[in-house]
Length: 343
Ligand code: F0G
Image 1 (cartoon, rainbow, N blue to C red):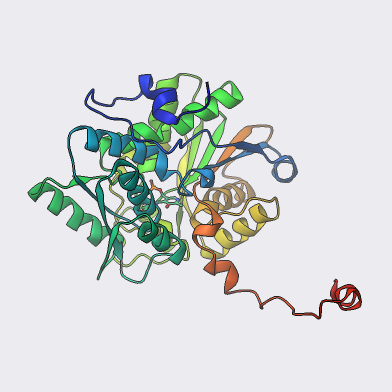
Image 2: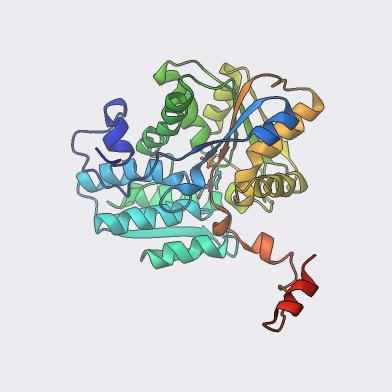
């Protein structure tokens, strides 16, 4: 039978209420891409789990199919989320698919235009909040406590259920869990989901390397960050809702949560693009962390199987690239002109 999305494939392993009504865009089933060249440089067997190939360009679709299926099944007519962009696009798309309204709150002026365009295209009401992601999330919590509007941020437990499926897929592809899993950490829903997924699937447990950006690293600093700053807008979060669970995942797995600089993130983004995989900056944080920690010797992946999760597609945030290049050369439409400019 053709592929029908994560609830169809793994629903028997997900704790979703009986009233759920499956709303799917055939998310999941993303490729686990072998990276032999880069793996050789790092001395490990390396794979990228490319979550940017989900229907709205990020891993959020796995959790969103679950959260919207539950919300719509119990009769919700409006869903709401706070977002640094990807959750907004995903909530908007799945709400559209279900025929319900989506409202998304984004921090003013801090969301990549490609993500905003998605949310608008799918028909969501987009509202900019004067404040951070964390302020927007507080508003979402308040309004969903006072009205029947359904919350679809990752504090919604069904988001975590859906996002566990990426761990299942990795285990199915490799026949067991990898030795290390490296991924970016923002609001910490995804690291929580992977850890829950690996534990449930019982095909071994990876050590987990969670990676924050240095200017937005509350879990590394041990306290909230009031004004988080990083080029990786998707993880510009100062008070992760599932911070405690992220710390437990790192500790229980004998892994760690670390921070990398924006330069390290951009360099990892470039390295991935050099392998044909274009991701948005936040998505490159997992690889940046792996390179930094193996370089420092605090993580030894020699001969190990390592999966780097690339959470979102480069097209979501092209400005990082477009702002740094000169516009392409213009030439007359002649062979001589063409041969003359080829470097
Ligand atoms: N990578 C990307 C591309 C993201 O969009 C996010 C989160 C993360 C990593 C971090 O995942 O929050 O589960 O730890 N983006 C959220 C959003 C916050 O609103 O789209 P997390």
